[in-house]
Length: 114
Image 1 (cartoon, rainbow, N blue to C red):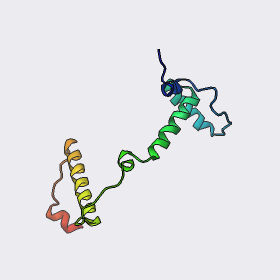
Image 2 (cartoon, helix red, strand yellow):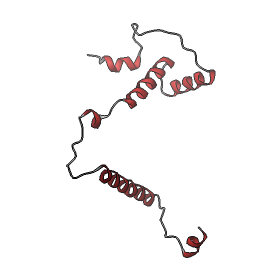
Image 3 (cartoon, rainbow, N blue to C red):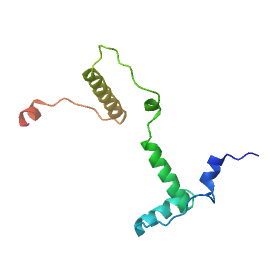
């Protein structure tokens, strides 16, 4: 049976991996130990996993890697900003409605007090 080296790397640290000493605060060490136990990993595997996840999050995503956006000549940055703001408002409105939160207009009394 073939073994995928990438999968195996998560299970057991390879002997050729770099070894070095690391100074960390005791409370951080305890948090890493707890997370490692919860995730059924060694402390080293937990640290490597979290570092890889953190660094991967900083890498450009598929949209950024795929090239650039070509804008029609009549589209301005202000147009893009306006459309994105409207999409955000709609998304928030939908999310709040799903939670049962209803937007009510200000009453005349509330308007006068502000």
